Length: 205
Image (cartoon, rainbow, N blue to C red):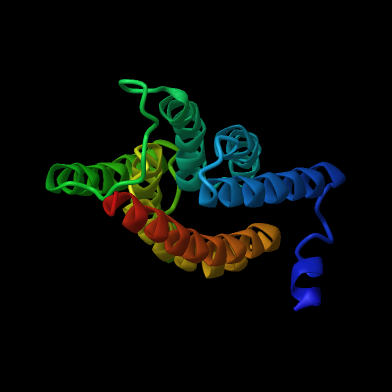
């Protein structure tokens, strides 16, 4: 297992290794903060996604690159929502309404179409991993939007998408990112459990 990760970085530059490590650390911190409903989920996540955008551009994984650019934008949007008070009441954890589910599905489909067009724009030959990338992009796009609204369903989508991303990044030779998404999967499961407890508690008020 150790050789698997080390062999992938034999020809990597010190800059690439350093940036991957920083993206890894800040990404983990961000998910942990999200689990705790801590506002630092967004600034730490922003650092991670900006670095990841650069790394994925260098690796020519344009679908994931586009998604991480979106995450960067959504981090700023979510940061604003989590700090804004509506009628002096903080944004609380809730479930998605029927309308929000439909919007989420629409975002999922729209994101897959846009991600496909990104690949076409860069004249990139699409293979099976790229189609998986397009699919997970739709999942993550919707998950990020639900997280900004503090909808508990965001964790269901993160768990599903992260689980798919683990072997995908390993196949692409991005071992550190693969390990990061494995940890993301575990943290997302724990976060779902914790948010569900908070939601149930709020419903009993």
